[in-house]
Length: 160
Picture 1 (cartoon, rainbow, N blue to C red):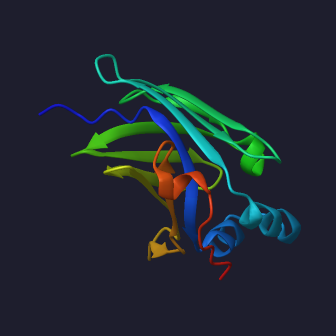
Picture 2 (picture 1 turned 120 degrees about the vertical axis):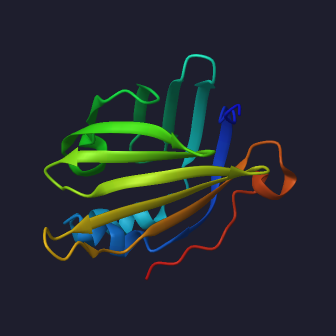
């Protein structure tokens, strides 16, 4: 079965639980509040034949770039996000892209999937060796550029 091509430009239309997710990662209060107000654009270049992928998340505060090959571990610089580095692997789980990040904050990762013109993202953080207590999940929905509904870049945002 062929994998979907994630290439495109997407604008955030909704996010849930960002503040709680960032607090679980020990991000300071001021930065959390600023991040929760941002409406980033995500540019993805994906070559399904080779597995090469570039994800650019563009904001008015900072930009974040990820270049990787699906299925191959790489060192990810999370400096623009939280000042850390980690070993990251992004791989397929069905039609979804699943990311596992190993480093100072164990149990981090995310899942991306497409539904029509919508790109979905769930970030998660699990902590605790014995209990594996799940911390808050953070969810985002991104609309592909060109879709009339998404051009306005308006969307609801929950700061809980």
